[in-house]
Length: 416
Image 1 (cartoon, rainbow, N blue to C red):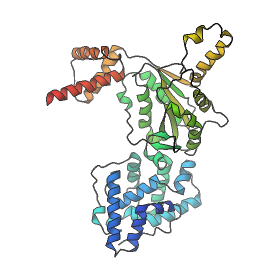
Image 2 (cartoon, rainbow, N blue to C red; image 1 turned 90 degrees about the vertical axis):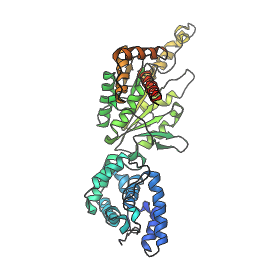
Image 3 (cartoon, rainbow, N blue to C red; image 1 turned 45 degrees about the horizontal axis):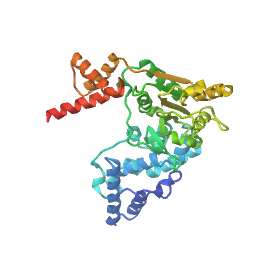
Image 4 (cartoon, rainbow, N blue to C red; image 1 turned 120 degrees about the vertical axis):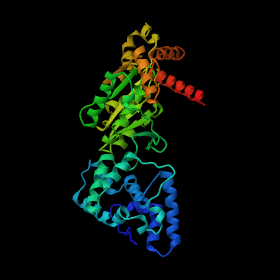
């Protein structure tokens, strides 16, 4: 049996707090006590089923802890964009020598339970970052090689939830980011039409990712035209390039200073703070937090953060005819108007979306139907598609997808 020397770790000692590692250490220290081995194995199987781990479960356990919990080397690689000091690098190699059996040997060589060698969970699941790490570790057998793989991983993905998820929400109660495990985003190829708008959005985001000047973005226009889908598609497309999306609510605007401070520590990542369907009434004052965050108040906005928002209103703050026509307030009317439009003016790039014409609307329906293996005759598509939007809220990508959902549902119902 292979032994593990976990108590003499230097920079990865935080993994010793994990309950499974404590049980593993106890089992390895007393190999003759099968009860300890089976207790550890039983709890490891529960974790494997919960997380969807497969294959060598002891290896998966350590990969998960080193990628999720990180270590001192992970924190410094993230903060300095991959540049860790020579002494810290040597300490990390020291730890990899101690952890080498867990990363390269069969699980049954460490704990005498054969089931841990090639486990198949009921619901296999593999995060993209974890899959990347496993692929890069293939064929790496020396502590020096494995150390460099982890440093490269921390530089590319970070550690913890930042490494695992493309999108986050902000937990106001705990004042921390929370990964969105089931993040639904379309591919840009499925966003039919609006080529100019997509080009503007992508080019601005690529400039941001590549550390070139880029603008905060306001996507404005007709409902259901793909504004939000476009922003979410960015997170899916450029996740491996270090882009992360943070979805926030208008009610969380007062948390922006804390969020900005939190994001400074992730220097190797680029963050888009995203407000969907944003607008304000005259009585709202929270928009001032947004104005300050965009241009920087006492503390400047981090260079790795941009703000994207969608809205059906060009000026974001509701303006009434009273604001335009009131003669008794004429002295201050210009001040009021300037305040109304000053927020949207802080977005350097404003992308306008209009309702699709009939040809574009039908093309969206045709695209999603073909994805399901369904081809409608052009005349039938025109009649049925137009009938649908006339009974709903006009032509839009959303209306088109709703028609496709209805149509496929009816076909499947008829096939029963």
